[in-house]
Length: 463
Image 1 (cartoon, rainbow, N blue to C red):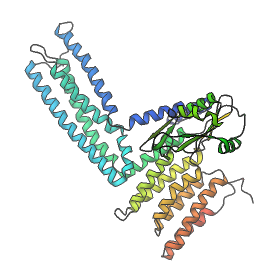
Image 2 (image 1 turned 45 degrees about the vertical axis):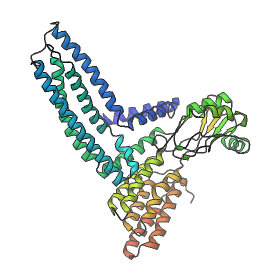
Image 3 (image 1 turned 180 degrees about the vertical axis):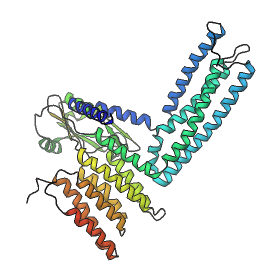
Image 4 (image 1 turned 135 degrees about the horizontal axis):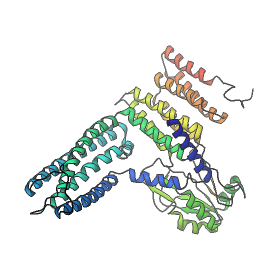
């Protein structure tokens, strides 16, 4: 059944790519979903609104029962107004106390994440649905209990509301146990590393190339020459990291202006106020594009993974570098990061081939974008760790083993050469920095096994 479900998902994604839906509207939905996830208020706010709606329903039922419209079931808690008031007061006090404990645990987890994993890891913890749902459940239960408490009258007892408050208290206890276990699992470094790698894999899948309109008009190289020689400039209004580009809207803007837009920067690059963010040909259309450009790009103080998969790679590299530092000296964490970086690069090797050219419905090129190339992504994953792991045979061997694993997924000589270049740098570093002959020979043995060509794997390789 699981295999059938995966096949259906793959077929659905393929249909969407053929229809040209990805990476337009689906990426926009993904960006908005990411913005809503990266905070601690949205889910609790939704749960509070749900609690208010539930109270409105149960209070209406209580009023109907009070008017003898129907008889409440026997399991509904009865009692006097004073008894109900005392019970709801105790429930509200207990819940608000636990809310303080939950917030304290959350702050401690965020502090630990910032200290041990790096400040950029805070985003991963804030996005966690378990934490958001836990906070929302307790706050919603408190709001419901207070609403039920104030609804008690001199001769009116909201029996159903009181019963629901007690039931919510039992649910809160269950959620508290879940939350403690969840945080204990969440702050474990292997789970953090695997979670980041999973986000990178998802971003690679969403940002796959699309097949769209037939080709017509000048080629991309011709247009780039015209843009460089005669293009008008579009400057950014504010500073920040480029987080997201609405390519579909940008294509429509270029079509309306009968122009071609070149974007020299990709999501993840930092832009300063007044910096040239796009060039337009013909130059006469630059003013029209500038007026609307603010609506097609999103910049902020942080990077995101929606269109910037190198950000996820940088997060894993940051954890690996911190583990290699003298204050931590945890080589096993570095090895785990290298393993998961290898998993990410295997997916990138087989799936990452974004088309920088965006065409209008008539097939003419309208937008020429910039994407992170395969070579650059491999460099980001290996070079900083190699530089910091000088003289560490264990790190070098694991990197070479990972390169060998990625090599099994390559299909072109260009990809293979990128990996071989990294392997050669590791080999030279081992010769220069590993003093023990046996350790150095271990590294060199892995290198020799890696560079041994396989004609079966690369049938296009010349003899």
